[in-house]
Every structure is written in C-alpha cells, then in structure tokens.
Length: 176
Image (cartoon, rainbow, N blue to C red):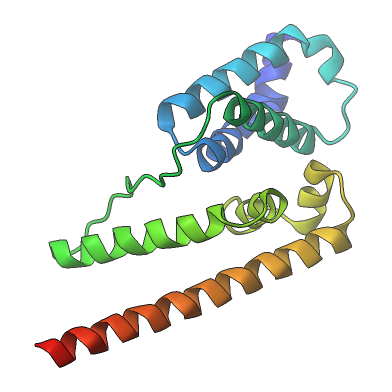
C-alpha cells in the first residue's frame, strides 16, 4: 500500500477513529496521541493492510484496543470532564446541560466495559450492529442483547436520579 492508497483507504476513517479515542480516553491530548500512535503503527505495517477485508472494523478495533491499553497503563481519576460547549441563552441552562452531560457520562461509565463500548459505538458513533459485532468479535445477537441491557440500566439510573432530584426539591420547598 503506497501513500496514496493509505490516504484513500485508511485516513478516510480518521474522524471515526479520533471520536472513538476521545469517547474512551475522555481527553483531547491523549486522544490525539493515540490517533497519531495508531497511524504510525499502521504506516509501518501498510504492506499487510491490503489483505484486510473490512478495514473500518479492523481500524476501530485497533483504536479501541490501543485506548484500552492506555487506560490500563494509567489509572483513572473517575472524573467525567464537563467540557461541552453550548450557545445557550443563559448561564443557568448551560449549567443544567453540563450537569446532565456529566450525570449521563457517569451513568455510562458505570456500565460494564462491554456494554459501555457497545452503547458508545451505537449511539455516539452511530455504527450498525453488524459493524459493532465485528469490532467486538461477537455475534450480532450478543451485541443487541448487550445494547438492550445497557439502555435499560441507563433508563433505570435516570429514573432513580429524577426521583432523588424530586425528593430534594420537595424537601427544599418545605424548608423554605
């Protein structure tokens, strides 16, 4: 595979690869480093890349594995960054949206690793079940079951969170 073929067949997936790294590592700098590292490794092995049938699945699997290796090497601090930017009309709405993103992010992070990866690939990367099955090396049925379980757990956590917020609001109102 020459430079032109590498650009045509590998670099066309750059956005998805970076977004996957960003969703796993949750850090822009580390995600860029992971992407560059993967590209360097792929360039070194470019002669073998032509034999791969489903390049997108191979690339996403490679990025996922690289990111998981990086996470294993560096302990997590358990934080979910609130670095989402909004053009909201007022600061209160911006704070509400940031809190919501943090809460949902924490909920997703609390899922088992497999369910977390699957829900991100399906709902963030908008990948098809067949692609996810290939990346995760599992059957489509297993992907569907894990996705369903992950969404059910998230729904349950949202309901519990809403109930807690309602109780807090009611208690605050009674004391005011």
